[in-house]
Length: 446
Image (cartoon, rainbow, N blue to C red; front, side, top):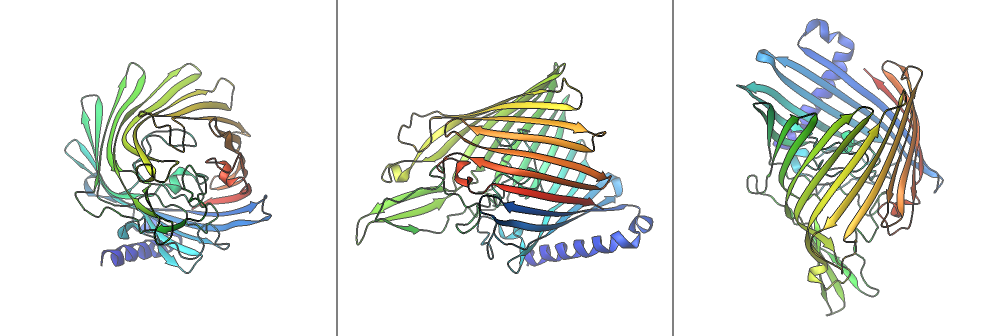
C-alpha cells in the first residue's frame, strides 16, 4: 500500500510539473513554485571504443509555501539510458528499502521520488520531515564524514554527489543552543549503498573490495542479511555546529549500519571445496568533526573521524571468517588558495589508519590518498575549466578528470570532460583502467 502511494506521488508530481510549466501556474497559485532540470549526457568509452551511456534526465521540483512559514518540497526524477550498460536489465535493488526503491519501466528507464519533505518551525526548533539528503563534510572527490546517506555506485564515484547520494526517510531537527546549533537525526529507512551488479560496467573487481576464491574452489553466495527493525535498526545521529574565533567547527556522531555488507566466509571441503559467502550489515559508531578557517587568500579545512568495529578482508579464507575487525581513524586535511584572480587551487590529504595491527589484511594498515583540484573562470564566469586528480599512494593508481563547461544562457549549460583511470587492476581506481571515457552534456533549467 505504501509503495503504491509513493508511486502515485511520483506520477502526480511529474504530471503536475509538466502542466505547471505550460499553464502559468505562478499566476494562479502564488504559493507554488515549479522548476525543473533537463539533462542529456553521452559517455563514450575510449578504451573499449564503444558507448557507455546515452542518458536523459528530467528532474521536476515543486515547492509549496504553506501557512506559518511552513514548506513542502517534492523532487522527482525520470531517467532513461539507451545503452543500458551501467545497470543491465532490471537491477534487483536489494540494498534499497521497499519505500525508497525506484520504479522500473523496462530495462532502460526508471522513475524515482528523489526527495519529499516538509519543513516547519516548532518553537525554536526547525524540523525537516521526509525523504531528504543530509550532508556532513565537504571534501572533494572522496567522502569521510558525508556518510549519513548511502551512495549509488552505478558510475563508481564519477556522478555528482548530489545525484549519487541516496535520499532517506528521515526526521531531522535543528535546535539553537546559544550561539551553536544542535542537529538531531533519526533514520528508520534501511537503505544502503547501491552496489553495481556483476554484469554492470562499473562492477567492483579489485581484491580490496571483492574476495577471490582459490583455484578449484567453488563459491556459494548467500542472500544478504539485512536489518529490518523499524526502531531497533534505525540510524541515529547528532551534530553540534559552532563558530569560534574565526573557526567553523562541528562535532559529529552517527550510530549506523555501515553501508557495505561484510562478506563473512567459511570454507568446507566436502563433498567438494566450497567457500560460502554470507553478506551481513554491521553496526558502527562514528565520532568526528570538521573545521575550517580563512587566512587571507588561504582556507584551511579538514575532517576527522573515528569508526568502531570496522571489518576488512583477510588474505586467508580461514582467518576469522575471512575478515578481521579493527577500529579505524581517518582524516582529511585540505588547503585552498584563491590568490590569482578567477583561479582556485586546492589540495587534500586523506589517510585511514587501522587501530589494531592486522598484518594479514588485504589492505594496508595506513591507506593514503592525495587530491588536487584546479579551476579557472573566463568570460565573466561563463566559461569554467577545471581538473581534479585523485591519486592513491598505496596502490599507485588514480583518476584524472579534466572538464570544460560553458554557460551558454542563464538556464543553459554545455560541458565536455574526460574520466581517465590509471594503475594496476588490483587498485580501487586501477580496476577501471579500461573504462576511460569522454563525456559530453547539456543542462537546461526550466
